[in-house]
Image 1 (cartoon, rainbow over the protein chains, first blue to last red):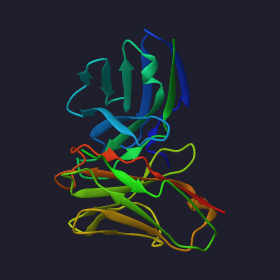
Image 2 (cartoon, rainbow over the protein chains, first blue to last red):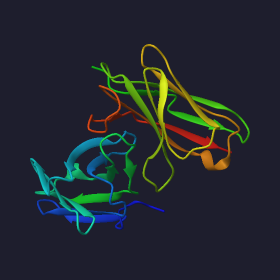
Image 3 (cartoon, rainbow over the protein chains, first blue to last red):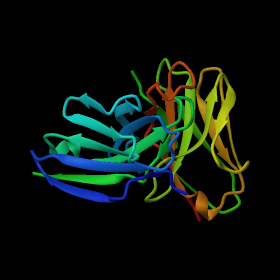
Image 4 (cartoon, helix red, strand yellow):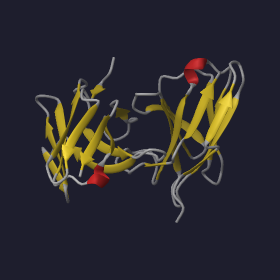
Length: 112
Length: 115
């Protein structure tokens, strides 16, 4: 039973446009959410996080939105750059002290 | 400042063998977590070590065991290898202990192939 779902295996976006990556979760006990980015032959790199007490968190070009009632979060990248091409993982945790549960990832390709 | 390092990079074993993977955490970090990432899947938590003890464990059989040394480095051991153990094994380190609020830094992983 997958508790964190990324239903789009891949996404292709033109440079300069917005990239929107989606993530759904089933466990209502999750209260902390993170996005990681992974390049080939490298480990995942932390990108941005959000606590369930917020519905939005912004860091430069990256914004994460959380809709608790829908158990849905999304990562917006504006403007998208070719260097953003990577696999993006959504992860969730309960109460800050339980292991991260990852989705399967979405491969983003930003085309110049 | 060196980040998280893992060795070896790649490893090929046959069914039934045993394997040991190694991880050195980022400088200043005292907590090490291990993840298994199968092809096409996200990382799956195996266990976490802090103060040389296993603190949390995911849904993995006892064939998976680990160790943390006084210098905070860690080993992952897998006994009686199965074909399904073929995966990328990721090590992540963090500071201050066990809270997921402390950012985890991942190493590049060890690619294990079981034939």
